Image (cartoon, protein in one colour):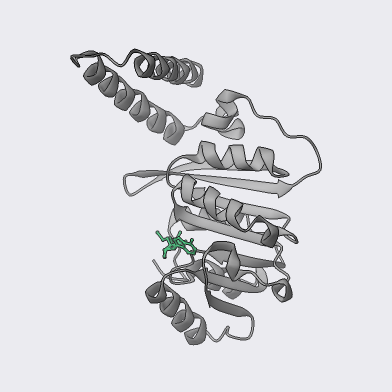
Length: 235
Ligand code: SAM
C-alpha cells in the first residue's frame, strides 16, 4: 500500500471524506490517507496526527516527498491534541485501531471536535462502543460499511454532527443500524465467526468445576441475539 494505492479498507474510509474538507487523520502512520486525498483534490488540507515518533517521521517524510507541506501538517501528539483551532478542521478520520481506543481518543479531548461536522471511523473490533459514543455525544450515523480484506473483516462508521436526539436499540448498537438493514456476505461471515467463538467459550464455561452461571446466562443471551440476527440476514 502507498498513497497512490490505498487498501480497500482505507479506500472505503476515503470515500466518505467530503469534497473540500479540512481533515485531521489521527493515527495517520505513513499519512497515506490524507496524501491520497490531497493528490486527488478531495481535501483542501489538514493535519496528520501521530503519537509515536517513528510513524510520525514516516508521515513527515511522505508529506515532504509529495510536496504537500504547505497544506498538510504532521503533528506528534496524542489523539485529538493534534488538532489546533487554526487548522479549521471539519472532518476527522481515525482508522486501523480498536473501537475502545478510538472511543477513548474521541472522549479524552472532545472539546477539540468543536468545529468538526463529520467523523469517519474504522474500528478493527468493538464498533459497538463507538456507536454508543456517537449516540451520547451529538453525532448521528449516516452510513456504515463492512468489508473483508486479507482475511480480516473491517467496519467503517460515518457520522455527522446533529442536534437531533439519537437513540439506537441494543441490536443497532451491536450490529450497526445500516449494516442490519442490508447485511452482506462480510456481515454474515463476521457474525457467524462471533457466534462460533461464543459457543466455544460457553462450552468451556459449562465444563468448569464451578460453572459461572451469571456469565453463562449473559453469553447465552448474546448468542441468541446473534443467531436471531443471522436468521433474518439469511432469510
Ligand atoms: N490509520 C492508518 C491506517 O488505517 O492504515 C494506520 C493504522 S495503525 C494500525 C495505527 C496507528 O495509530 C499507529 O501508527 C499508532 O502509532 C497510532 N496511534 C495509536 N494511538 C494513538 C493516539 N492516541 N494518538 C495518535 N495516534 C495513535
